[in-house]
Amino acid sequence: MEWTLFGLFLLSAILLGFSLVKSYRDSKVEKKQIDLVHVSMMKEINSIQDSIRDIELDIEVVINEAGIQLSPERKLFMREVIDLYRRNYSIESIAEKKEVPETEIEQLLSPYLKIKDEGGLVANAN
Image (tube, rainbow, N blue to C red; front, side, top):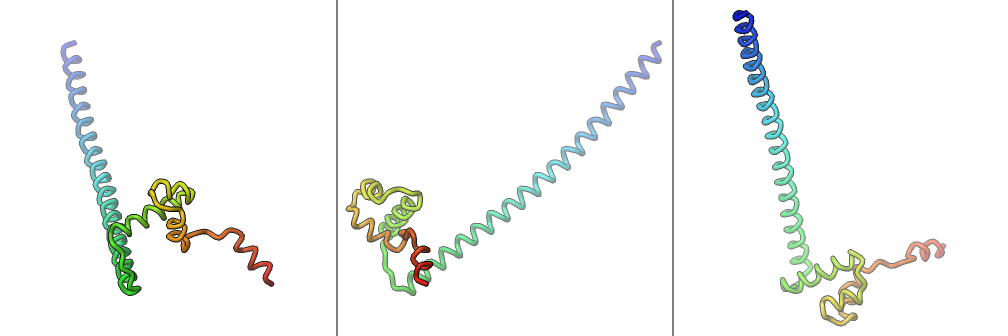
């Protein structure tokens, strides 16, 4: 009887050891997978940052070549106004929010205004 209990205890200790080794190996594999995902995400983030940097440089070159001189405050103001317009704010609400006359907002947005029924005019011209 004692030998049976000792055998069962020994068997359970061996199974516990195998279980611990297997879980250790599984955790190493999982850690490697997480590291691979992390590395690929970091590469993608770096790639996006490089693209953004290139776009910023391209914009700077275009602005310099066009001879447009805008202060940083004016650029920020224009960016905010255009962003609000593209998020479907009305010109009146943009003017109210920025505390400027509506005519100034309209002039600023004139190159960006969407012309409605533009396709109909071209189709009827034929």
